[in-house]
Image 1 (tube, rainbow, N blue to C red):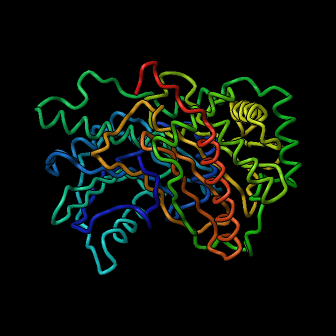
Image 2: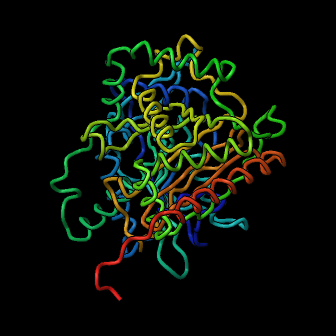
Length: 443
């Protein structure tokens, strides 16, 4: 699946419509996760969503699409919950009491085109406090296959969730075309609210974990890590600059994985080694960045939709692959405990201007695989920013990355230079892998 942005997504021009399953009366209250509280507490705003787009390879009516989407909403509990805030700003989460039939709306596509119209629809429909904050959109070009876009506010989904949503929608369509009940024999997915409840009930983090978090924040002047090169004036959020780069094709990725095997580390560890070296060469500083880690630690969460992510910090001063392996292990340990009690003494999650975040996702390891003919895209929203985030995405086609930073001249120059060094480093590591030995008698 290709990781892209709404301003770069590959979308046809055509008719635009959307389908929602309206939220009825709010039911029982549910626990709010630490990340959900921060995200929703920032209030209604555009650009807080993420989406998956797929091309339909077989005809589907609006009724079939609406029914299949209702089936997805029914299967994944988080899509049947809504947020609100109290007068004092406290975030609340409630279950939707009753399901309502899908409702379709046709949207005008103006002179700016389908992409702009789609962005406006999803910005409004998938804001944190929308009820519900998710939407199915359909683009029907004059020629070519229709494109379905499934979007939801980030409080309800993460990158892992997106192929699950697409898979379940397509399975539901197959069921309806065949005259079967939707998802016959497939149990409802586990509830993210239950995951939040279980995480909050875990024992407190060990003292060495709390002390390490305190040291990390102290090293950052009381805040999370920032990008190590100049970014310009960050007094206010700036429009984002987004770039996507293909780094390695499938053969190059195979060689990089072979290189990781040679030095006895995982692929992620070797990637971190390259990033550490690039940061040291360009900035003369250790690699320090926020690194989201997933919290699907039990098999039942693997097939569930939700924001199963917690933030940790990667602190990597030594580019030696074994040292980077140890740094990644520490990152995973720091992110394996509930953060709210750890960060409470520090005023919560202290996000500074210029915060540096790295994300890594190997789609080959996810439980849902989307066929190449679907031309699937993970589409992120567009919003002003003061930080730098770089996503490394691994799939059957190779390794690509996407980066976003403030649209300032210093930031673009710094981030582009860093990406150049990272790309060159990854290609160099791949080129040093020993070639596979040919079988005896070959040639």
